Amino acid sequence: MAPRNAAPDTLHLEPVGLLQNPSGVPTDLVRLEGVSKVFPASKASAAVAALDGIDLSAAAGSITAIIGRSGAGKSTLIRLINGLEKPTTGRVMVGSTDVAALAETGLRDIRRSIGMIFQHFNLLSSRTVFDNVALPLEIAGTRRADIAKRVTPLLDLVGLADKRDRYPSELSGGQKQRVGIARALATRPALLLSDEATSALDPETTQSVLDLLKRINRELGLTILLITHEMEVVKRIADHVAVIDKGRIVERGSAFEIFSAPRHETTKVLLSGVPGMQIPDYVAARLTHEPSPASQTVMRVVFTGPHATDPVLSRLTGELGLELNILGGAVDEIAGEPFGTLLVSFPADAARLALMRSFLGQRGLKTEVLGYVA
Ligand SMILES: Nc1ncnc2c1ncn2[C@@H]1O[C@H](COP(=O)(O)OP(=O)(O)OP(=O)(O)O)[C@@H](O)[C@H]1O
Image (cartoon, rainbow, N blue to C red):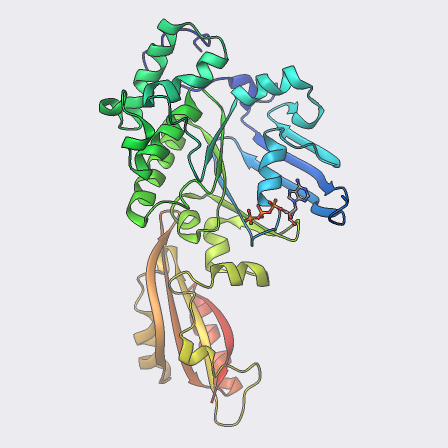
């Protein structure tokens, strides 16, 4: 490992000590244990329990997404991890350091190991691209000659070498976020916190910024913890997902598990806009919880992994003679794995439902009854 001020031939990230336990085995880089945060009452408002008993971990080298409705506690969680807020109870471990227990000097040191990118980029308009990326190094007291050796490869990495002397006002949103990413990497952090980093970008630019983050994650081993309300972001790059609701983690799992079989009501609502998870309006308007004599069962069939491309439906209609109406569907990828959903309806008697579920279950497909339509 090169010392912090050495001239890097290639990009690498800092403190391995932060990433490994004493036995040298990679471990969780971030671990929250029993974390609660209460904002005390003020003259204008009552006390707010923003976080309540949070246990959460992010493995070194992973990309973890924290999703939740507005006000669920996502930003508070991020602010606890970079030490901007202190928890009311619990521990916030980054590597082997309890961030909550650090005084100002310790916080300054740990923040060099934690990069941060923001929705609105937070660039200094009076500084060039180069000088924006250089800023954290200047603050850390790095010599000018070493700063150039560090910033230049970072600008190459984010594809902005030709913009080094431009000002933020001369850049597109995607380019600004690339500067933000280069700046966040300047002190060679082990952890990158992303607060809605693509929310202000159009879909195409979002995609290219996500590709960059994924590349940095893979090539530099950077651990990324992101909060977002964009399910597209989660689907594209997250390995793991934690769903937060009213200050509590209500569901967590691999991105694939969460998308293919969401369990908590909040997760289902958050995912309801994802193609394949949507119920067409004309079906949703007629959906009931209980069957009636002439109603049809509405079922979502999820095709995952090796079964994503199986011709199961034609067998279902051919071998079992079941008549299905196809109401909608989508084929996609989650965390790089193929994933398909199909919304079907069929006559609602219990025998047919059991037959169909067992047929699909034996072939590794997941089913969920969403309700009934007459
Ligand atoms: N400094 C503060 N003082 C008092 N209450 C606060 C403070 N910061 C956040 N809160 C409250 O804590 C709760 C969680 O807020 P937080 O900003 O963490 O939610 P969020 O999930 O990030 O929301 P959004 O997606 O809208 O940004 C909210 O009820 C909010 O009003």
